[in-house]
Length: 257
Image (cartoon, rainbow, N blue to C red; front, side, top):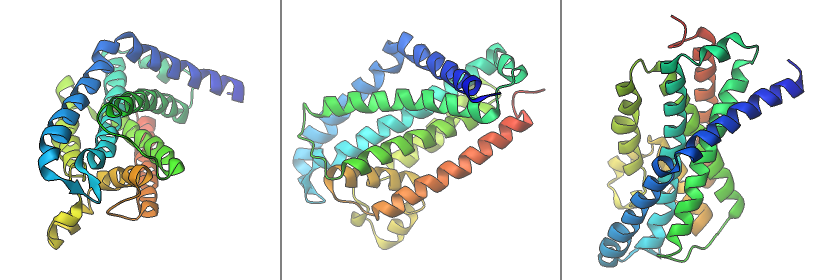
């Protein structure tokens, strides 16, 4: 395939993905906005007023970057896993398999679609947060790079989940038992400096810690880990998961029977 054909195939997948989640926006865009608003009210206003400052900022300002990142992570992941698994279930994915579209274009198209939803949710949650606190941007390039890379990472993760899933129940296992606990334990609501040394070391194994803190550094200028380490870890995870996704796709894992 020439460059024009590759770009057309990529653009078609992306366009279809964006149309899919915007067409059912009450299910894809509205629930995260409502959920995050409840977090702002309950944790930020009600509980935060009793906690006081954390990391040199009032509690609401401290948790907002983490909540934005949490919304981006879950939305990017959910979009790809639900979309690609639905294509598997309906057997419409076979159209892609018989086409001359390279696997990397298929992966890139679905990942971009997941990023579009994740970043869109991130913008919505950011705008909602302005009703509760005043955001200051410490390092705009760090904010943009971190949120884009994190969205891409979890979109790839959703693609792998969709490939390995054999039934609809498998789609919810990873978000429920892995993604959600890692997100809550990733420093969204607290600084790991509050933890004993042993649990600080355990927290460093959590990949979401680096993403939340990288984004928090871009917004507030404070972080529990070096922002350069955060970016490096995210890039490593993207490379590893992308390699796994392409290998599984090439083998037809979960697709060819």
